[in-house]
Length: 69
Image (cartoon, rainbow, N blue to C red; front, side):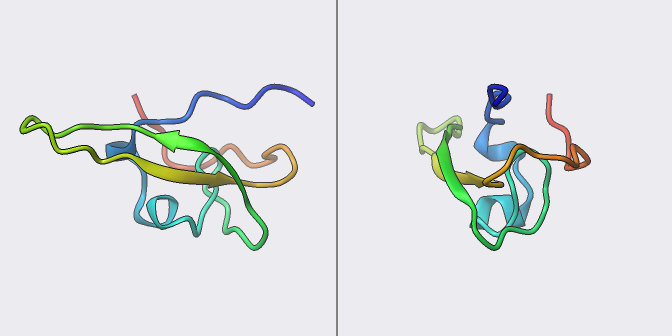
């Protein structure tokens, strides 16, 4: 299995990805996702926006999700 890509920042996730309804990598709707870690971000005031994110069980086959920079 190939290594998963880097997790995007929390402030760049779509609403569905932030809620755990969509794969953090490809944006596909999740039925049985697996936790892949935490997405990190911070507001200028120091408020943390960290969130646990989920991905497809199998390697993502549709890398068509929202891209981040």
